[in-house]
Structures are given as structure tokens and as C-alpha cells.
Length: 212
Image (cartoon, one colour):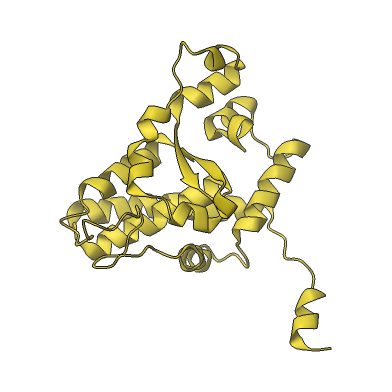
């Protein structure tokens, strides 16, 4: 049996609720710390540091493919406020109370995903604040004006790689494994089984009841 066969027959890694919470909690703490550092000294290093944690939080919170989030365009984000659901719309009126709460407090960014499919990425209020800071300071932090990607690399035309970003926070949090596929599987299974230990109101605030 060669190495490829051994890999195919090895047990599938499992992401537990505890690991997810630890990973997500680490990201939130890092976001607060890196936001403070960025506000104290805005340069390309602190910009990248904040962009990395914002990307990681978006991927983890939404359970989206890393590549979909990483390739978000600046224009995608700028259109986000227009995607906020109008309170008087027919769609909004037909939502449950919990769904209305989620729709009222979040913004959505539509990004181009795998095979050209368009996906919505939920922006929480805290993340929206950080993303506005990043957007407003691109020029002073050496992000090229013609770089179309939101999570841009300074003095480059390309973007941050999600796999490297997630690996960084995996090491900080001390968990064994983190992949977007495992996050999606965990969130879907936990919410369907009702064992996420989150109340309906908390689920609504996470946006999962509508958008997962």
C-alpha cells in the first residue's frame, strides 16, 4: 500500500463543538487585540494582521469555503450595505421573529464561489467595523489602488491565502485540526440535531437559521 492509499484509508478527522468554540473564541480575542494594535500604528504589517483575523472569523462564522472568502472583492464589500433586507419588504414580513432579528442586525456580502456559484457571507456588526477600518486605510498601508481583492497583500496584485491564515490560528488556539469542510459539517450537523447548546435567539443572532 503506497502513501496515497494509506491517506485514503486513514480515519476522517473530526472537529468537535469544543474545538470549534475554542478556535472561534481565540479568533475573537485576536480580533480585539489586533484591532487595538492597528489603531495604535497603521502600517502594512498591522493591516495584514487585522485582515488575517477578519478573514478567519468570516470563514469560521459562516462555514464557507476559505477560497470564496479570500477572493472577496472590494466592490463586493462596498455593495454589502445595499443587501441589508428592507424592513417593509414582502420577504422580511414573511420571516419568523428569530429570522427577522438576524436579518435586521447583519449585512450580507455576495461572493463568487466554486463553479461560478454566488454565495452570501454574513457580516456581523463587529466584523463590519473592522472591515471598514481596513477599507479606509488601504492606501496608507501600501495596498495597491488597482488590487481588486479585499484581503489584499501589500504592494501586490494578489490576496491572502485562507489555508495559511487558518493554520496560523489553529496553532494559536492549540487545536489539532481545522478545515473549512469540517467547520461546515460540524455546524450543519449540530444545528440540525439541535445539540449546539444555543438558544433560538442566539442562533438568530448568528444568522444560521436563515443563511446556513
